[in-house]
Length: 150
Image 1 (tube, rainbow, N blue to C red):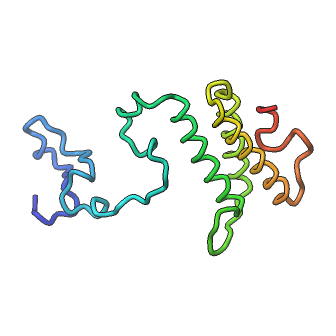
Image 2 (cartoon, rainbow, N blue to C red):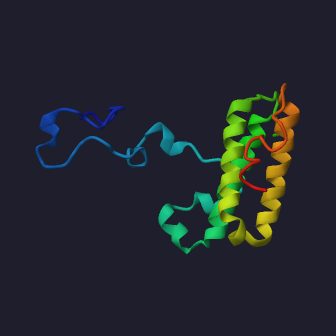
Image 3 (cartoon, rainbow, N blue to C red):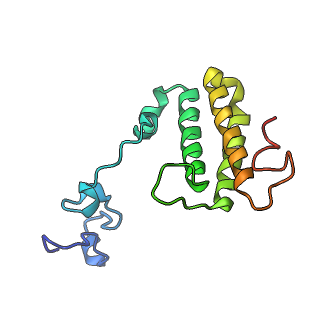
């Protein structure tokens, strides 16, 4: 294999005679791979930045809150609520994300404590924004996730 080969994972069967599979080398282990120099953006969700093995020591409520925060931000982006140059509305995707958020909060409401109330308030804000952005708003109680969290 050439030193500057952009595809170090060869599919040549002769390369795997030593018993090792040449397929599936993680990009982070390939020197000079384009993604090895791309820094991840700082988004303030340190819990989700940890390797999965470290999440064992994080309280479940913190992991759930982090996941809910991701859903809130993604929903807000789909509703055009995030500061951006030009809002890009996608109500179909926003509906899915808001419903997922409502389901997560409904299933974990009792374990979230005070953080749960803030997350539910965020959900309500998204549900109201969804209703306002819709050309034909859903009937009361039939919007995204409204039937999951009362």
